[in-house]
Image (cartoon, rainbow, N blue to C red; front, side):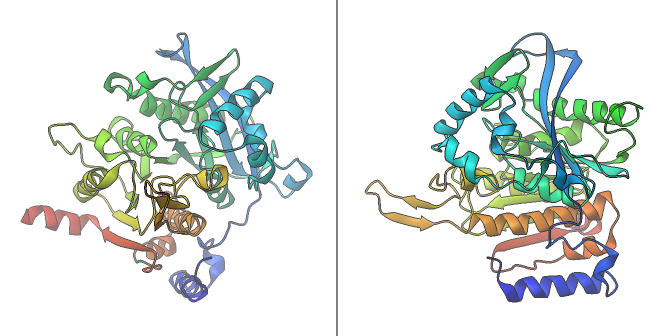
Amino acid sequence: MIRKSTLMAGMFLFAVAAGGSTAAASDPLQRGPYPVGVRTEVFVDNSRECAVVGGPRTLVTEIWYPATEKADAFPRNTFSDFWVNPSGLLAGKLAITQFGGDFDHVAKTFRNQAYRDAPIREGAFPLLVFSHGNGGFRHQNTFQAEYLASHGYIVAAPDHTGNAAVTVLPDRIVPYRAETRQAERRDDRPHDVSFLVSHLTKLAQSDSHWLSGHLQPDAVGAFGHSFGGFTVCRVTELDDRIRAIVPMTLAGTTIFEPDGDSGTPCPVPLMVILGDVDRTVGELGNQRSTEWYERAVGPKYLLSFRKAGHFTFTEMPQINPDWGDGVGVERNENGDVTLEFSNALEDQRITNAYTTAFFDAFLKNDAAARAFIAENRFPEEFDFRHAEPQEAAAASATD
């Protein structure tokens, strides 16, 4: 659990920043005021041929959104719902087994707050696109997507076809393909993000789609995990509609070139989230990601969680609580515990708060949210760095 004294202090400071009233803005430390709906959509990009399966690039996409107060009349979403159909369920069971989990158990215990196909509430909302990790899946960060939707965001998360653990297309099941990590395929993912921004914006401007009138086209952000962290970093180089990004445990060694080039500086507000004992990207990956953070030119924030690993910031605690690398414990070859990772659920709660406040600050222009993320409210949980553009420029001038 989040330490009570720290939680109360954070709530108090946020209220002061909001002018003494918590009604001035949603408290990022609490779930938002809106019920959440979720729908599964299939979108086709006819402008691109899918190198994995041929034909137009097709993206199975989960969308979480603020729902009406009638949402509880609709069925609560289940883990099984994410797998679309009976064939998808069989593929999902195999995928979860490969992660060391028991599908039937996960299906019974998986925490869902969203309501399947609930009606969207009135209003236009910022759009966030989530990009999953290498071999992950679109719903691997359900805890985060639901939380953001409850605070007034529409969150779209595609399976990056061929790079997801398994993708359930309308006409076939597509397993993970290792070639999707090759250099010539890496930009498939950023182009997926850009396509979704374009396509969802178009649907929101139509008269017939359920998203009609519900998107703010000038308030678009992105967040991602691992290879998805690389994806959202790269998309800022390709698409100037992306206004703010949160890459988590990003695969820093895949962002940068082998010759040490640390890439194009991030041009938009940035929040980097790392685990300081990440076994997947390792110390080098975290070092390179930190170097990339340092070169960013906009407002920037770096949160490095102590004793957190690569999978702390995913739904792995629900799938396999003994997975390691940020989930459970680490053991040596004799089976002895050598490291007990941080409480992943606590780290996720804090991540939800900071992610929400970050997007509130830069997509909703919320001054109270910007004050919230300007300091470390949980110093016992993570190390924190923050710089504004003038500070970054001054530091660059002295290099």
